[in-house]
Length: 319
Image 1 (cartoon, rainbow, N blue to C red):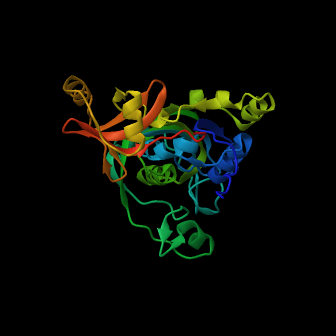
Image 2: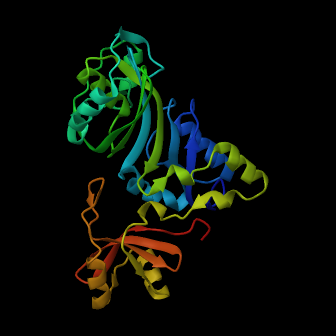
Image 3: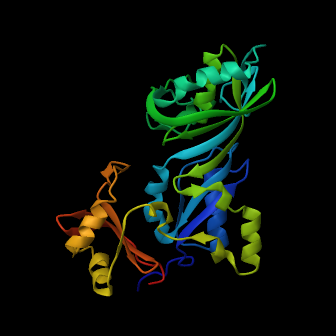
């Protein structure tokens, strides 16, 4: 006899406004408990200190997590001048002090050097593995952690406000793997100052925006009324910007069996016109298409030589 899967067959995205002092893993567990979902995952870790958008995938939506993880992200953060810490944020131990308080014009003058494809050294207190161990575990044990620089993409860094001489509020639009804490360290160094991240909030991840996010308290309130499903975004929301191909019931059956389908020439030309360069992890998705049966995602496949060959298939958890 097959064992019954634990939990409910829940599929979709929850856009959580993560509170401070909660890890991303704890946030996923909390959402999973509210829905009693069988399967859950998130699209990009947020430090416990950070708040803001944490997209959480349930059920079949976990198959599109890489689309959100590899999407561009937007962060708003506050630099506190005068003190540097070992963690590069407010939770760390003081490592240096300075009386330098950069003026607004000086801050704006150095920001352009941090835009584009730049080399960035990740924080010692990070989840990067060093000889099989997490860098933050080594750092907390007192070991000297030396990480190699990585190339990251930053499209924009903007100074939003300088509410006091001690504080500067900025916004960054960046690609995967960019560390706000490292950026703040490097901005401070460029200004001959000391500084650390005093506050950090993520406001966008790929197609998702903080304006559409929900707090755990509001999610609990919906659960109490049996309305938690209202907080779910569609399974394919993370990949919603892919070209869409409407498929027939027969084609649905083929695709869910992992078999290719023939696409009419006129439709092929229309889909080709919507192509754009796109990489998800190590996969070239410039030819990828989202097959839809009405409002229900069926598969993501590559369109080539007049055929759509599926490489990600969606089957409703309750099916």
